[in-house]
Length: 300
Image (tube, rainbow, N blue to C red):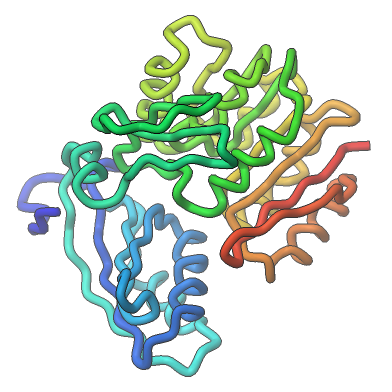
């Protein structure tokens, strides 16, 4: 990615990013993972660790308007590890994120042998029961991150036929798309970032056509009051947002509805479970992948 200063006379927008390159001394993969979780809580969207030494170097990307050097410093200071962390910052101007993913990150992936996720630029794509096209730009959720994979598995494990589904923080809309492919009757995807919401709508049209059952809405949890009650509620965000908004999630669910959440570590389960219990939800199981967790709850 080309790095340059933002330039005079222009305000950054949500398609502009800052790239932060973190160096850990000594190398510590756990510290890198922990820092990624802390950064996700303050708006960072994408993380790339060194393939040869994942505990030594990590790149992290945040929409330019959300970047705060003070908050990043606080996150580094909060690391409970005996490591020294330094970082430098580069401005990454808005560009064709699809081509950047093609060149650097996004490769086809098969999940549970049933879902293949790929982009329009891929040519050698394996066959699967559900074929999902995702042009991710800089939005989160291509299936490569463990939390997205866990959420997709949850959709595969549940009967979607005729159901009303809410996908909170829809990102690329990959979860909403699979829910529709699995027979959901109504799917509402909510996304706070305007650029990501536009990307989500494009991905829905790419996979399901303009008249699909999926509707993408811009906003946050305050928009839940506008929607029909959900049979299944999905939220792949992060621990802090989930625990602060879970009461709103519960209020948007039918009796007997299922809530599946992810975006946090296995170690965070007690915090998430406590918030869910206080919202009147009952624990119904969990899953994990590479120390990341999903959890399922039922509204009695």
